[in-house]
Each structure stands twice: as structure tokens, then as C-alpha cells.
Length: 141
Figure 1 (spheres, rainbow, N blue to C red):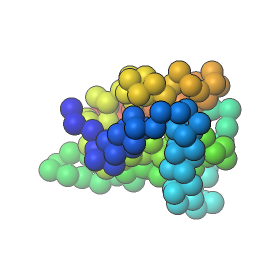
Figure 2 (cartoon, rainbow, N blue to C red):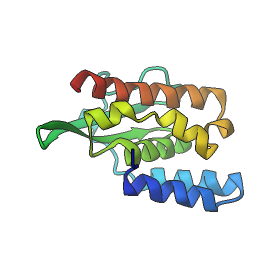
Figure 3 (cartoon, one colour):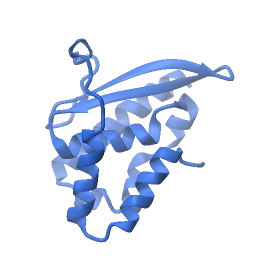
Figure 4 (spheres, helix red, strand yellow):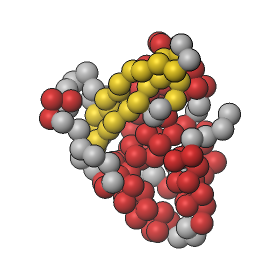
């Protein structure tokens, strides 16, 4: 399954960066480009449980060709986690529920070598975010 153009650009850029310090800076910059959530969206229902950092994911549902489409917004209080949110949004947002459910971000992150350079707590938080997004998609598809 093809990845969205926005995500493919991120993956390509990460591949070109040799040094992990540069990759971390790039991920942090991606997170800084996200628009903040409205305070009203920072609810317990939008909070991702299982993350040490504070993370909220909000979704809007639409439809394309009769299939549910999910668009995500997110925010974290930790810079690197905010960057990981940005990468996940590029991968999942704007896709059908079936596409989201079928896309394993953890496998993709492992191929990019991203997860091996995260602390155990951040890696667990990443899994919690992916499970939250894919769980919502599976419920709709």
C-alpha cells in the first residue's frame, strides 16, 4: 500500500540525514510545525493513555467514496513526542479507516530505524498512539 506523499517526504528526508542528532532535530522541527489543539480538545477522551508525556489526539470524520475517512490533529508537551505525533499524522491523517487499520506504523518506524533510537518510555508511548489511531479506524471499518 502506498504511503501518503507527506509521510513519504518525511521518510525520504530521514533517510538522507546520516546523524541521529540531525534526525532528532528534524523530528522536533516537524512537531513545531503542528498547530496547537484548542484547549477544549485537551480532554480525557482525546488523551492517549500509556504515554509518559501528555499527548492528545483529536479526529474528524469525513467520507470519501462511501468510506469513512479520518483526519487527525495532535499535540504533546514533549518536543520529541510532538515530532512523533507529526510523523504519525502525516502517515495516517486523511486516509480511509480501512487504510489506517491496515497500516502498521510500528513496522514502518522500525524499517526507518526510528524506534531503536527512542527511549523505552517513548517507544511505549509511540505504540500507545498507534494503537489508539488504528483502534479507532478498525472500529469504523
